[in-house]
Length: 86
Image 1 (cartoon, one colour):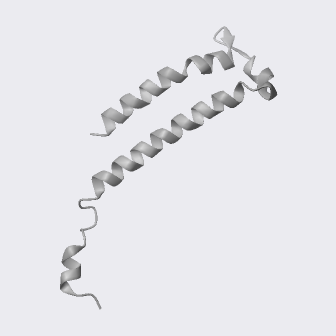
Image 2 (cartoon, helix red, strand yellow):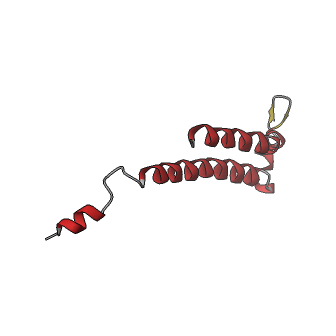
């Protein structure tokens, strides 16, 4: 059986660890989105997918467009983190 002292020492559900858990989930989720985008762009640049990277989109090759979008996507994700991570 559990003693009354043990019950008092355990944090309540959704208590002190909740903000840390929420920030950890947010951080790893945003990292996962960026990782998938970055790795997808890197794989698209390989010789195996050169025909896919050469598809014209908005007047430029898809591979170039995705490469140029790496920094704006990272800035957008940083802004989302600052907005939701309060």
